Image (cartoon, rainbow, N blue to C red; front, side):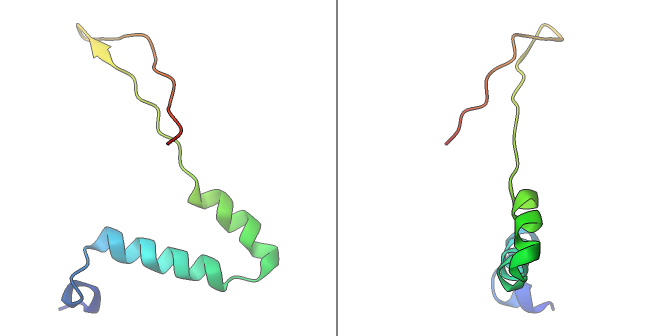
Length: 61
């Protein structure tokens, strides 16, 4: 059994913890590029009658 599974984590949680730890351990010159990869955007497009409806503006929460 994997250590992360024995600790009660799923793979996504384990992967997020590992990535966050790696980013913190990077030298300052590489942290800027790594921080860019941490951001993600999600666009939601509602569909109606099999066609995309008006695109919704992503909310910043």
